[in-house]
Length: 330
Image 1: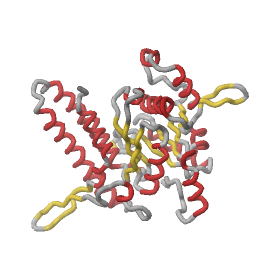
Image 2: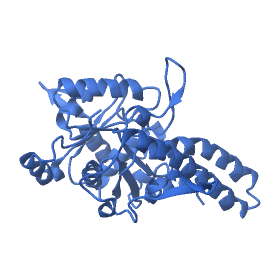
Image 3: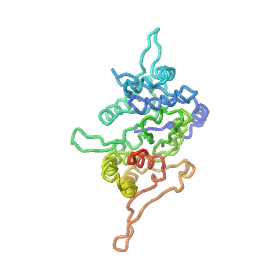
Image 4: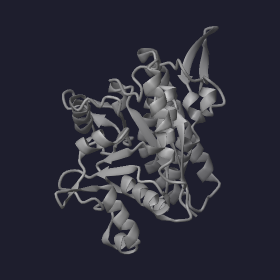
């Protein structure tokens, strides 16, 4: 799966035209659930540009993820802005954008489907992207949970099958993106440094309250999000069971975080060896990483063996996501 903004880095004319027009680049979100709708609300509330397009699933309402109580508290002017993000006029009739529209209009399309739909949506998007001759549109996902292979009923993470699939991840509490005083941090992850950098820049300009950093990873972060979904269940039990012993909570939550990072590190080492992922054009330090590579070694019978790749652990928004989901707000 090819998934880069620039297929040929030596095509200077295309490269510079993309860079010069970066501030006009559009991001599309397909399958508008709670997160994309909240993100759109933040962009409508703070952003001056109109660089985000929304396409709900067929027969779904654009703002259907919000309850009637939440909708009643929203600003009507902002709701109208969101509706404009998800519709266009054709012969005087207002129509909803669909996946085809996003691929034609946007430089990046995030498939925001959950694990029930993400496999089919990605296959459809890849086929559609090729048909439309829009293969420089970068595809990404939000989902951080295990998928199931229907043939042999085994679990897997999407980036195992598609190592170049981008991944947009960050942490926010429910309602934070709709709070005019709140802000939000996230990572746009991709194994290619240039794609990660450009993708983060495009997402970062959607709203002044959203700070997106490039992360040169994807499978690792998806794996962490998957483990986090399980760990947060344990954390919820711990928060209830040990509510009278507050000293226990940081210890247990730290153990859960460490398990997330350790398991993702072993997956990272394996995936990077299998797929020979490397960065030819940009140093990780140029993207804000403290170190190019952080790897653990284990000594067995006087010999050292690589145990895990912890390079991704420098992504603060990912760690904040895990810790935030394990900690009750005070």
